[in-house]
Structures are given as C-alpha cells and as structure tokens.
Amino acid sequence: MESVAFWAGATLYAAATAAFFAWLAFRRPALARFALLAALAALVPHGLALALRWAEVGHGPFSTRYEVLSANAFLLVVVYVVAVRIAPALRGLGALVLPAAFLLLGLSVDSFALKSEVPIIFKSYWLYLHIGFAKLFGATTILAAACAAGYLAKARERRFAASLPSPARLDLYAHQLLLLAFLCLGVMIAAGSLWAHQSWGRYWAWDPIETSSLATWIVFGLILHLRVLHGWTGARMAYLTFVALALTVVTVYVVTLAAPTIHTFYLVGTPP
Image (cartoon, rainbow, N blue to C red; front, top):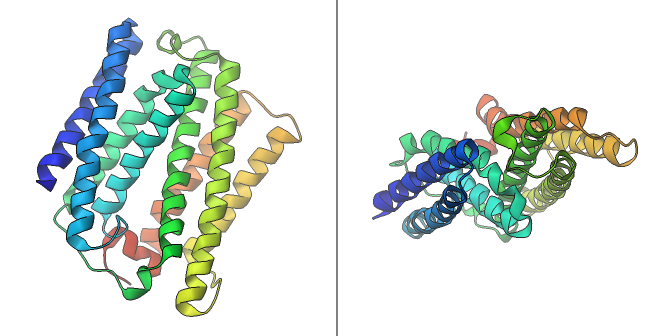
C-alpha cells in the first residue's frame, strides 16, 4: 500500500510539472488549473505513504534517505501551495518547485526498502521541533530561490515568464521568503541545542552540522542586512539568494555525508 501511494504521488507530481511547463509555453488557463490541482492531489497519496511508513517504523520521517527526502519534497509542495493561496500570482513558480520535489523523490526511492529503529535519545519533543523547522527552512529557501529565478527571467523579458508577477513583486517575495527561512533556521538551531542539552547535557559541541548551520544562519543574516539597511535589491539580491540556496544544500546534505556525526543518522539510517 505504501509503495502504491508513493508512486501515485510521484506520478501526479510529474503530471503537474508537465502541465506547468505547458502552461508557461502556451499560456492556457486550463493548464494552470490542472497543474495546481495535480499538485494538490499528489499531496494526498504522498502524505498517505509518509503516514504508513511512520506507523510501521514508529518514528517520524527523519531516518534513512527515503524518509528524509520524501518528507522534504512533501513539505516543499505544501509551502508552495500555501504561498500560492496567499499570493496567487506565484502559481507559475510551480514550473520550478514541482521539478525540485520530483527530483527529491527520485533521489529517495533507491532507499525505499531501508528501515531502521531510532535511538531513545531521538524520541524527544525538541527533536521534532528541530527537524520540523529544518524542513521548513529548506522548503522556504527553495521557494525564495524560485522567486529569484523568476525575477531574473522576468527582468530579462523571457517569454515563458510572462505569467509571473512583476519583477518588483518577485524581488519582494524572494526577500520575504528568505527572511522566513532565516527565522526557521534560527529556531532549528535553538531547538537542536535544547535537544542536545536534554540528551547529552551540553548545548553546543561544534559538531560539523552545528557549525555549518551557524555559519549559514550568519550568512543569511548578512544577506538580509544588505537589503534592509543598505537597500540592495534586484539582480544582485537574486544572485545572493542563490548563494543562500547553495549554502542550504551544503549544510543539509553535503556536510552530513562528508563528516559523519550523530546527524548522519538522518540520511543513512545508522549512527556513525
């Protein structure tokens, strides 16, 4: 049942991606409506697949690459749908967001059969906050980068960007989403520190992920500082948003695999 639900969700994400591409190419309103409906529909079987895995293994989606990446893709689409609900003009960004979600599912599927128990120290309220805000941080950063990409396309008058909001609005949305990502990262770090104190009696140990997360949070703050206090906007802020996305990918995925620590558990399913 879980496998059927997973592949049903993946198929609907693929259909939504194709429909978004077709909408940007042909500008048919019916294609836009179908694309958004397909993305919404995909959340149902995808969420069911995640719930079935949670019930089977007895813990949330934070162990093994399948659980982590699949849950990240789910939350990314949820954040996108909420953003479109708040600002309907962002609907066209689905052409960037849905392929990212589909890619995450593709990267997760080869570890679908891997299942593992989690140590008792992972069963903490602070851990759920820590992981939840980590996923929100990643999703909002991706959406901010999508707005930045849309800004560059719109500013250069690319034909496929005609359905997107004005460059000024995309620039503002990218900033607002980056600010939200900055706040989520801050909560993630704080909740992780409280969990560490509860589990090991210390708040900070300069773990590679802790250090990388702190460095990323500082860089996010500097980028926001350049906009708010120095008035940076436009293309240079769009490129800085891409820098923020790159740092996010390095922190969430690359450092974890390159420097085995307790955090390695959330991608490979076994502690170092």
